[in-house]
Length: 302
Image (cartoon, rainbow, N blue to C red):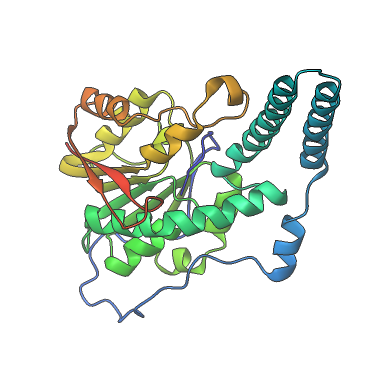
């Protein structure tokens, strides 16, 4: 779930929140349905290049052709190779800078379609593992920051029946998906369309807070962690799960300064901001077999 940033207004509540534990919950199925999947028609439409994406691809390809033509008149073959390598490098940078914003929230077109497939493939095991590590219990008040397509909410509800469950999301693409999710209505999940620096939640009211693959985008960090500290009860837990080993590779301000959403790519920077907000923090590696799934868990208590 790579969450997105922005401020979209006041929280929207699907239904009256549950304020106390459910003593005798109805038996739930072993697995809740996953968030809605695109139909074949929708997938085909979204996989097409948009005019803007095609224009950028065309412009970058044209640049490569110009470089190749220049290299063809070079008398030194080494120079020719270097020119071609430069052209390919620029092509790669152009494509990557167009793709990266879709990791914040997938948009329309080819890059959005690819990002959605990628995020589901590599994030779902991480999200499920982080929920188990946070260990929310029946009756607790739980907040998820950057709920994305709802996988974290589904995973929490598979594990327990919270007293209150708050889903916080910034990006319109994901907000529409969360609104359409029948499970969120059925379980009276509260959806807040707001910036996590200003949560519509009382002081000291939350038992657990979860943030998976969204800390990279939170700027300024100190404001977000002060707010999360405010809403947690004394002794409450915050779990920040992140794949710093992966995002370091795409953090290149010179190449992507206009479109790179990844700001915080160092665990030490994030841990320092958490401690400055008042949290007690421990960090550990959580190996899940594949490098794509494994993550760093930053466990904090108030």
